[in-house]
Image 1 (cartoon, rainbow, N blue to C red):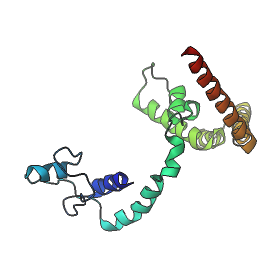
Image 2 (cartoon, rainbow, N blue to C red):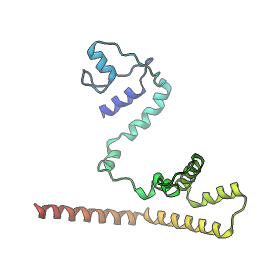
Image 3 (cartoon, one colour):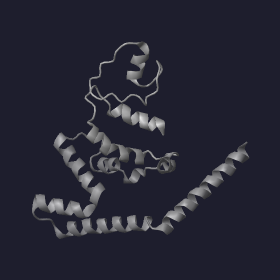
Image 4 (tube, helix red, strand yellow):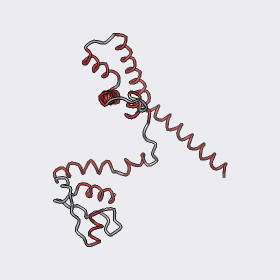
Length: 184
């Protein structure tokens, strides 16, 4: 936890408020200030750093996010579902392999953001605001997509579904461990 605190104070310090006391000392330190101090040469800080008022606002949230019990479930990695990521939605709307103009990309990025945050129902309202009218068949399809997405999301977030996923994951892990032992 001390390295987390050191990183926090290192990042918020500046020329008016040097907070490098928690950083590791010596010439091998990752902190430029401590390396310069060990070498005996003054380090000229360029950045202003954050005001104490803002530091005091950020610090509790930063420390909560760095709590070991919170981070334990992410240590193994593999926590992102690539099918649900913003990038996946964006590149489905605006493929990387086709050249487009900046305005088209911006529109695609905004649509992806709306889809990522709210789903197809909000796309419908955006299209209606921009265009004024929309064929009823298109509106029905967008609402149908939205309902499917919402029901799938709700079904996957049920405790029984989560438990089932954990059991399947544990079974796969046990099977792979047995397979590795048999190979040896």
